[in-house]
Length: 293
Image 1 (cartoon, rainbow, N blue to C red):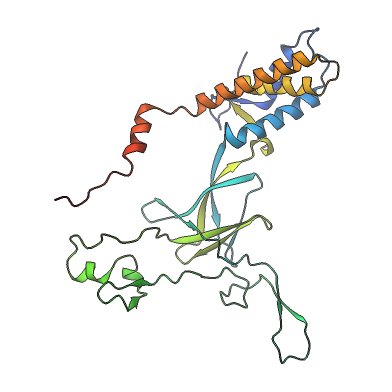
Image 2: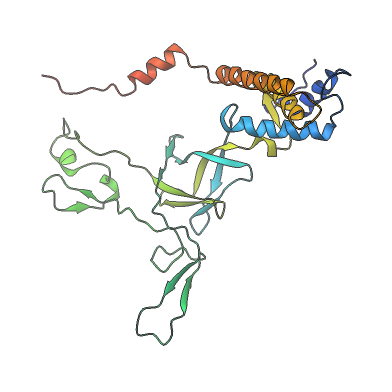
């Protein structure tokens, strides 16, 4: 079988058209799916690529997207699920945002007018404004970024220059003075708004974000499948074609189903190969220096 050059994906991927042509060539006259149309084979192949993309051959994409004036970012057309959102620092490293489910969805909200007004009409709050006030539609800044000063545990600082450290660390010597300091500091926050197909962003340090997500490969102009999952996709096509035919014996349908799930299991194991060194790194990830007597 001659593989066509897929420069944008590498030689470890097979195109959908290539796989369909090869599948049709291998069909025999007495095959249960010999009379299947090209359109039916293509339909099941696309469904298989989409199904595999969820948990077998996930197609990861990374895009740099501008934050709009109302603090939102439109999700790509092939978006399936989010992996991470962040902004690029001056050193080229992506700083990951935290998820904040308290960010306003910036959608139209109905509120009852308080007593004393002439009527009980509702007030509509639209999402055209960038204001972060309660009456605005932009994402609300829920977190205040205030850090308690360890010197008296009463005052707080909102100075951006030292917002990540305590005063007693800066001015009273830095040795051993950050034990117990909280983590989870991030340059921004986000909330996924699937109803309007966008992200609500809360950040003052970036005008664009880096979005890493699982993409729907079936919606691309030239769908591909990894060579490790090629045989599993063939088995999926055959299984689905047999499943919809009443003339195929139940025993053959059961055999096709078992073969498909076996090939799927092998593809998942090959693509998710977990080495000994990776296991050691996971075990040692939380090892850290600590004071000892």
